Image (cartoon, rainbow, N blue to C red; front, side, top):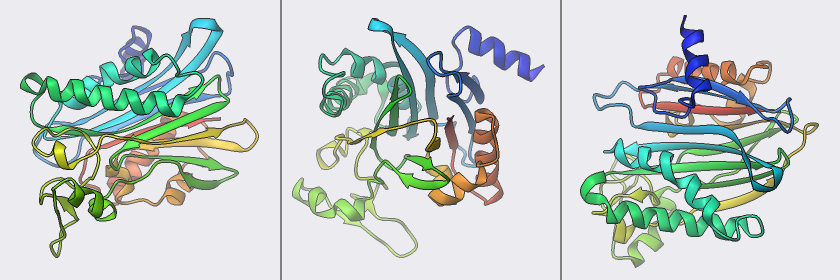
Length: 285
């Protein structure tokens, strides 16, 4: 029965909602039937509601092109900000006039503009924020990955993991944070934090800290192919806190179904006692 419900949700377009609505889903490319995606989300052990949101779909656009649009949004003190990103960020990126010619610049501008919209709407969206990692697969050939925060994108080629995103840790951006008037704490037994509060140096929202934070993404462009590329993994830090990039790739190398692969990763993170919300998208080639 649960499988039937999942298929019904995917058919009517509910596959990219929050975990409270659908914790699992899958899809496939129309350009290349061998390229598929699957996702799985699990709420962590904390008392606050689930704050992870995902977006995962293949979309036909003007000119006969196909875009695979994939994202993990990991909220902190907020469900509204990651949900806002889920509903708006890709549309803002695709509205940029030079997306097809200069995707890196277009994505950076869209990230900044979206963050401004979130800050301007803080009265409704609240004081919290969200990290993000986005991946756009163009015609199953070109991959554009961007991120702010510590949600991560990893690609596997011939079984070898390569990290595509950058973990924006406060300790690594201490000078930039201090130049903006902020400070970084690093107390024993705790992670480095911006102004003693936030454990990432870049994020959407967080109006009270924004003057000390950046929303500029790191952006990377990679070419992919059916022969060398095995899979792409996007996941929130609930996975990466307990698994290395290579361990994640190794865990799903024999799993053909993308949704089953995403579920295996979340299950393994739980087995390793991850207490955070865990969201994972796997794209199989």
